[in-house]
Image (cartoon, rainbow, N blue to C red; front, side, top):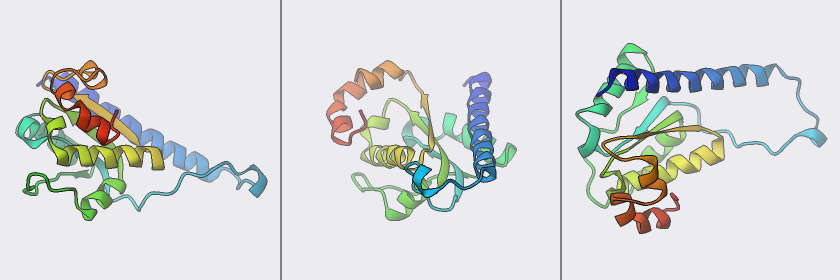
Length: 173
């Protein structure tokens, strides 16, 4: 794994957190708008519980990239990062508590690895992440890992093509 890549990803997460902080401070300093000029508001998400939520396929990245990323964010940078270490039964849908955890995170990192698309659990997480991105104007950082590229996902090539019907069914594409 490239140390430069890890540092660039960490920089991207920190930049997103910094811009969100500036936006909050700047917005709170503005005078309140009148009712006639108030634009459509974005619903407020639950109180932040975690700064970063990482969605990943354990078999592909747990002992490699993910463990390095989680360790660096949580230990070295002191960024509260959610790590799902529960044993998940095959075919089980994500729990309400995990859904709440996703909603109450500030930034999402989705590690798209070769077997990510083959996991119903990962796809359910991805749907929840994308819904939160749209509903709460949150940021998602996509990491293409293990030979998966943006074209594989967008053009549904390789395993992403084989499982493309699942991606369409869960409205990920």
